[in-house]
Length: 192
Ligand SMILES: Cc1cc2nc3c(=O)[nH]c(=O)nc-3n(C[C@H](O)[C@H](O)[C@H](O)COP(=O)(O)O)c2cc1C
Image (cartoon, helix red, strand yellow):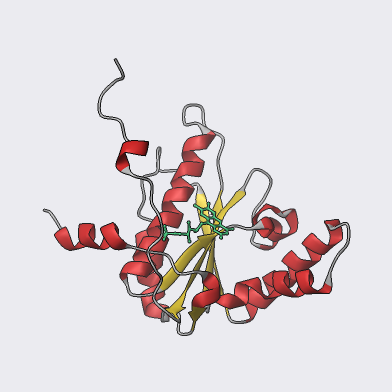
């Protein structure tokens, strides 16, 4: 059965920059709905090759400190400002959900497909949150590639951080941003 309202929503959906977010985030009940929707994604072989870590309250500052320490340890000239901004990054939204891609060895299903499924979790979570009226943004940033951050989130060797989905309330409505024209990115049929 068709649902034209979903298509209409998708046609104008926009992310809100994390720095333009404020409270409130989703209630515990709504969060369960968002997580349920996000884990209902295409997944070749039903491997569930992903994990979601919900960061709220103090956990955001705890992970921020781990991230800031890791980045400072490898910076050539660590700066106080860079440390403070890295440490505070997860505080921009009341709710941040880390999505980990956790590929598993499989005789037939390529690792890339498992990473794509984790991307589907990110996009579905983003879309679910936005459709419920929340501001949301999918971010990685340097921290997503820090081993200490992955470990703090429970990731192990071979896992990757697919993204941090920030969820909150928009301080102001986002303006439209440029999109590629369909002519640039879509081809009907094969080239002659
Ligand atoms: C995997 C991934 C990582 C991203 N990381 C960042 C980032 O670190 N910083 C950033 O400014 N935008 C990042 N973006 C882009 C934003 O999520 C997004 O493109 C922008 O907010 C516009 O989103 P919209 O098309 O939903 O409106 C990332 C996007 C993806 C898919």
